[in-house]
Image 1 (cartoon, rainbow, N blue to C red):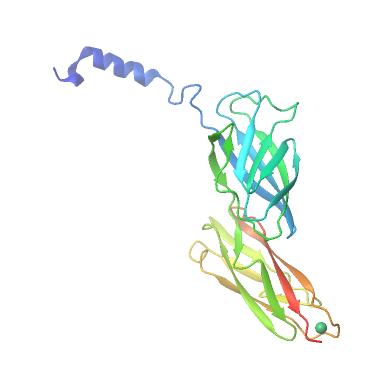
Image 2 (image 1 turned 90 degrees about the vertical axis):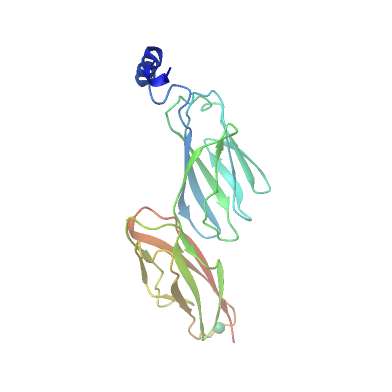
Length: 238
Ligand SMILES: [Ca+2]
């Protein structure tokens, strides 16, 4: 008997069509990670988790980037072993209903100036469907700039924009180191082609090298890319 002619098979097919496509208990747990403030040697990030099943306690785990150290967590306890970070619920927010959103903030020390998000996030030991935040990527964290001279670094995006992205560099004329050009424009065609930023240090009268923050901030475009920060280390010649 050909199974597709079987009345029983036809009846089973009809029953299957009536079942919901995502039965309760099979919802996917999702997670996002967003760097919402970056001041160079530290930053704050927001993690959101939408559990697929209701929970009464939770852990969120991920691997931080090289040298990143959690210094504080908001709405969670935290421990860190090497690069591995574990966040745990506080007494008041252990219960999270399936499909509702849990928000946790984290603050890091970030001496290596890395703004790349964690590669994955697990929730109660299970990998979450993870949407890492796009980011602006400088080719170096620190750039040495000789006084009276210049140095360069490159900038790319982590993924193509859906709407052209303009990134600004600080253009202060009185700084010990000046970055140019003042803006970089990335499109769906050139997002991964490094654009050169030139750091120039005018001669000055002091006898010390200044460290100048060069934040790379998105001004327009979509999606939203995390800020990267370069530190220009002026090499004094006086
Ligand atoms: Ca000098």
